[in-house]
Length: 311
Image 1 (tube, helix red, strand yellow):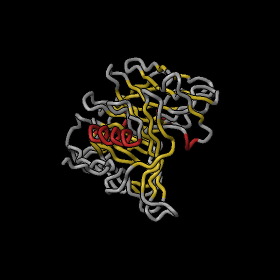
Image 2 (image 1 turned 30 degrees about the vertical axis):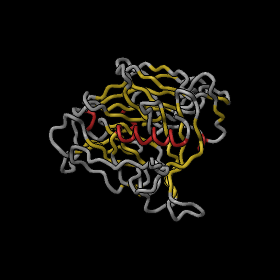
Image 3 (image 1 turned 90 degrees about the vertical axis):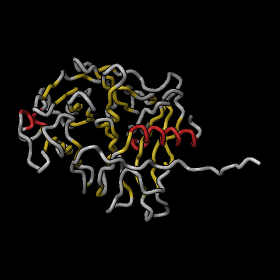
Image 4 (image 1 turned 180 degrees about the vertical axis):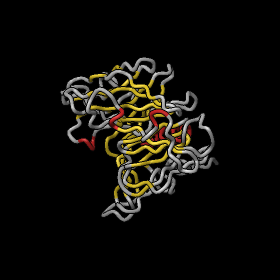
């Protein structure tokens, strides 16, 4: 007689130790997080501090690196050509090319502007030309990473233009000259009505091998009123356009991305692709980075999509 197993809920993967020493603890309210340094650091234990409006580079003893543009850290005033009110929009580090990529943003103009920048361990800061977005186009993107052709892309689930209906935007950055193209993200027969910013889709992980993205809006602690512990989020199959803007991701084994100590509801507003790993971060609560294997996360997210009927 065959044995029929009961349904098993997908489980968050275990965090993995990054293959180098670095600082990454007691981060407060999402305003700062320490990430491992460059692949070609001058020694082990180097780190890069990502703040809300600065970048800073440290060696293993906590001494600030002052080479080139790192002198004084990378701050808003280093970004040329605009007042750039919200300048640090997205960030990515490749596992092999020894560069840190980030997107600078300027909200002082209409339409808004973005530009691609890079910096290496020696402090060589390269800034490509500002790219003007379409009128009314959203710019809250996530998951900056390299595509198979070597260029960069990120996903914004907001408006393509000033209209109400949207298929989201795929920001594609030419890694050589900083040129930006913005095709629709979801299929032509897919539309969303984003009447509330909390219902827009700014993915923090994806795509998986099956083109699944997730956006984790918040961690609901077990002591929140009328709520059990869990991850409130969204999921979408970018190939079919099917998904949900309101769902709970499994979060029962204590391995999830952030543990809040001072609030019942923490927003996990960004997932960073960093040297071949995935680093989530929150914008509320005291948190410490967990680091995950991208392969493990791919399997987990695909399992959730399959469990929810979107794959």
